[in-house]
Each structure stands twice: as C-alpha cells, then as structure tokens.
Length: 159
Image (cartoon, rainbow, N blue to C red; front, side):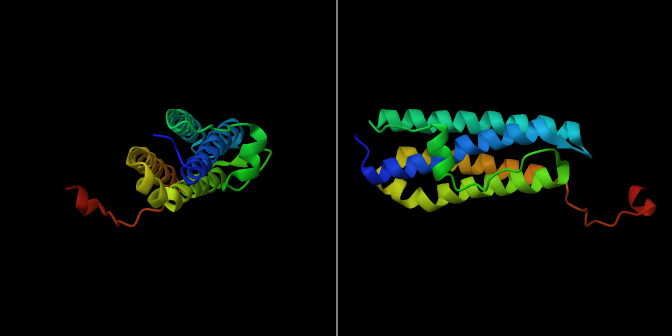
C-alpha cells in the first residue's frame, strides 16, 4: 500500500507533535524545581521515552507506506500544535500544567486525524489508539501530582 497525500500529511502532523513532546519533556526534565522534583523528574523520562518510541513507530509506519517522514527541527517547530515550552527554571506545578497540556495537544492532533487515517489505513489508526491510551494515562498520572483529595478521612475510619 502507498499512502495518499492525506494520510502522509496526517501522520506527519502526529510525528511533529510526538517529536516536540519528546523535546519538551526533556526540557522540563532538565529545568524543573520544587515540590516532588524527583518523582516528576523520573516521570518525565518515562514520557520522553514513550514519545520518542511513538515518533519512531510513526515514522517507520510512514516509510512502510512509502511516505517520507520529516523530523527536521525546522519542520517540527513550524508545524507542531504544541505551545512553546518556556525557558529557564520552571516550578514542578507549572511544569505539570505545561506537560499535561502538551500531551493533550498531541492527543488532540491524533483524534483530529484519526477518522481519515482509519478510513485509509486501519493499521496506522491502531497505532494512534495505542498512543492515545498511553498519553492519556501519562497525563492523568502527572496531573495527579497536583490534585487535591476529596475524601474526608477521620480517625474512626481507620478502625
């Protein structure tokens, strides 16, 4: 099978977001400070590793479909849907918000292109399903770092 221009463009949009997510995750990893630093520092590496693997899977799928992936920095910077990550030191709280927003943007791109991808190539759509599920799980886990509990536990509850 040879990818149409539409399929190529859709997969390229996903690729650009995944590469940018990997880069932003590393930027946050290197520059976070504050409460729960170590936990978030390690968690960001998990996200970076997944984003890098997802980008590689996407690019290799594109090549299998005779499409040409473009991971050049100028292409990624010019086409990603992710907002630019701030420079300098960033608090863990702010980093959580930025990384969750970045993952949600990447997932948003995947959801936006999903139906067109699925129509032409269900195998590529299956990859998107896997990426979406994992990134949404990461977003939930990272966001839990700053969530407030809602249960009211008393001493009587522990008996």
